[in-house]
Image (cartoon, rainbow, N blue to C red):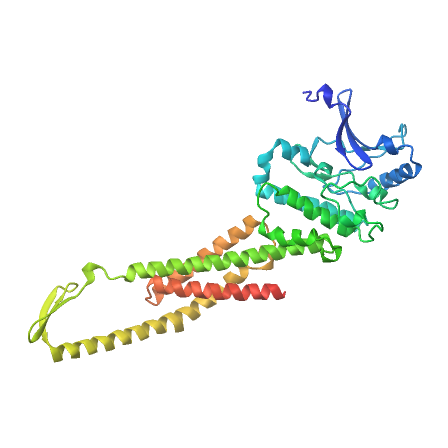
Length: 405
């Protein structure tokens, strides 16, 4: 099935400072070609640099970088090289055509992750991209996988200002009279700007906020020193978000338990003991037992004192079970569960995995609480409240341990 139209022939797919990617269809065959812009073909230094970059580019093998192919023996020019023939669209065009895509949180996170993987790979090879822009980030049409192209590193050893023009993504120091030595910091700046652009129509997720703020600082000294450092900032953001969520969850549990306790212990009309005094005696009607009788004042006082002693004794025994037994036993069961939920492995995992582990862990804690409450004859309300306090304490303790690691 032929899908290419005539106007697809020799179409400029991406357009960088000095190079452009051309999509061509010849005899029904689709090809992608990276070429030097016509304005620089007569510049011998640019041509030589382009050829050197093409040689280096053929050694780059990463799933998120558009590969440079081998030049055919009958190559017509030294100013263009073939690229892997993929069906791609620029991220810039894709977002314009599919504005609702910005609401797909997991997909945006995946794109950011793949861009960082590509940059990290380039930096490991001693190469800086220097033109990170949505127009130079391609998405494959089948799986929407990132393919980075048009690295400006080709001309970095000439003059980094050559062909530069402000576009909102370029680090300000690249426009200074003395080009910076730390070009990785320029890529970090562009990465921060790119993430801001990607979430421009929505809300920048909390884990990215501090990382982006540091990355886009005007002073390169304040930026993350590498992609790994940038990732650590995001990981720290995720940890703080989990801490806040943990506190919010604990507060919600405590409020719910308190409300439930208040509702279940509020005195209803059917529970009232009606006591009506007479001239010499006290008439007592107990609506619960259905008994009625008269007590004189001295007998009433003795009865109340005995009831108060019995009540205090029962409360002391209940508190002993609740705090000396239940709390200690529940804590033993809760420690391994909390440590498992907030382990570094799960904290660094995808959101879905962490949510699944948390849900399973909280279910285990609830079952432990109910089992112990039944074992020691405790009501669910007070035991739930103590369990929530233990969970909050252990969560805060575990977060402090993670920050020190």
